[in-house]
Length: 162
Image (cartoon, rainbow, N blue to C red):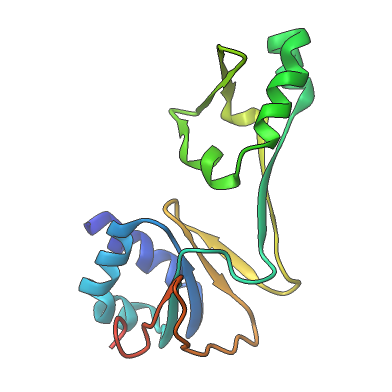
């Protein structure tokens, strides 16, 4: 839990006073609930929305370095890359272990080196994404944070960051 607090403090310290924290990691959310006021004091964040889905306008995906995969797997490359393109960003990201993404295609398992996968994040111009491993902090220069009820977000202005 203490590593979550450190990671959150570092990421949020770059965010200004308003931000959106995007994470599916329950231990990060619990850490924020337990230590939110300390984090707020150290970072200057006054308004924070925590949500599990990307904010509107943010699109994440992986592309694959075709040449690197072809060099390693030859004529199986098209099948491997075809399978990778059917997977979600989160599925790929969450299954990279020790720098390797393992994928099964037609009953065979292939190990794709993390360096063969190119993470692409498209975001609105002028916005910033601060990655901290278990999620990211999203900031827009003119961010208008409204704390509305949403099944994918958590109100935090009064609840977590007191």
